[in-house]
Image (cartoon, rainbow, N blue to C red; front, side, top):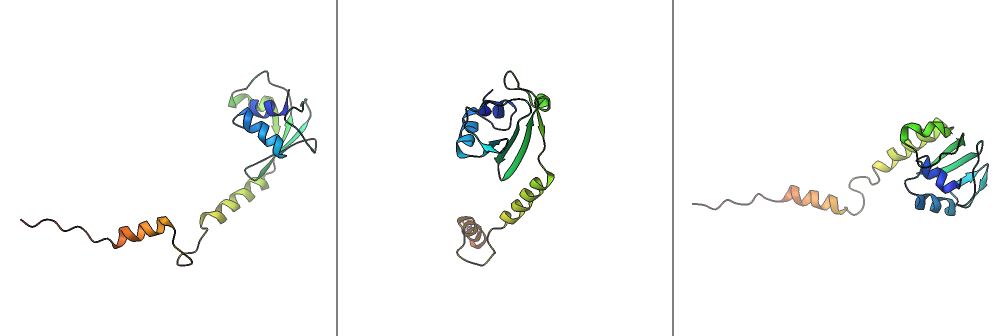
Length: 128
């Protein structure tokens, strides 16, 4: 089975096109070698996939006939991704949440709109 089809079948990538592009960019390695999308995978191969700044390490146990349900994925692969990879990604998310200190630099559009909403005076009601 082709590597791009395998990654799609075991639900690591959403579409075959995304899987093919990941292989072309060099994000997929089989047994340590960068591979093309047409490379065949066999039981026992070790796949390294870089996705969303995490290096997933997958061991091929069996080849599915077609795309499988989420509950059946563990029959066809063994995930050996270390827990530290996920913890590092979580720390990166915390670092990105507050990208700009307040009162430093030019305000963003959101900041400006918040200021406008705060400083607007309430409209006067017509007098009767």
